[in-house]
Length: 218
Image (cartoon, rainbow, N blue to C red; front, side):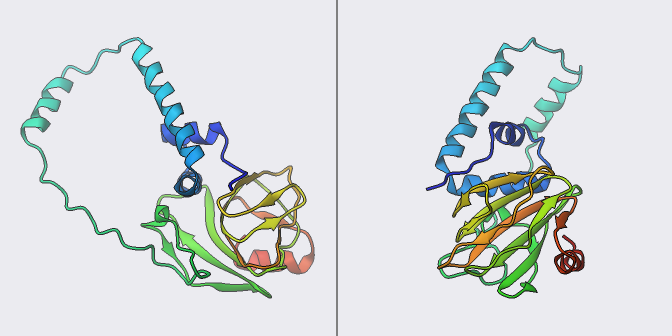
C-alpha cells in the first residue's frame, strides 16, 4: 500500500515537460508502481487537452504546411526498437530490480558511507540543478539528522523508514525542503533502498556527519 504520492503540481509539471530531469525521473519511478498516480496523471492530461481545444487558434508560420507535407512524403526509415534489457547497477536485495526509468543512466558501484550504509551515484544526462543518489541502509540504521539547502525528493524502492514526520514504505514518495529537519531511521527486519534527488546540499548535524557528507558530495 502506497501512502505518499507526488502532488498534482509535480504531475502537471511532468505532463508539461517542465520538471528538471532529476525530478522528472523520481516522479517517473513512482509512476511505475503507483496505479493511482498514473490515473491521476491521465486525468490531468485530459484536462490539459480540453483546455487546448478551447484555446484561441493561433496562426502558424507560412511554411508550416509545406514542411509538414514534405515530411509526410519523405518519412525517415523506421527505427529498430531496442531490446528491453534490465537496468545495469549494483546488486539489490533479493526480489528488487532497478526501475526501468533509470535506463540511460550510469549507476556506480556501492560505496561505504557508514556502518551498514552504502551509496551509489547515478549519472543523469542533462541534469544541472541536482544530484541523484541510491542509498542502501541496513535494518535499524539511520542517517544523521539533517536539513536541506533546497529540495530533496525521495522514492522508496524497498524496505521502510521513519523520520519523525511519518513512515515511508515501498513505493512511497517524499519531498523535503529547507524547513524540514529530520533523521530517517530504517525499520527493523529489512534493508531499505531509496532513490534520492538532492538540489543543493544536505546540512548534517554534527561534525563527523558533516565531514562524511562533504566527502561523499552530499
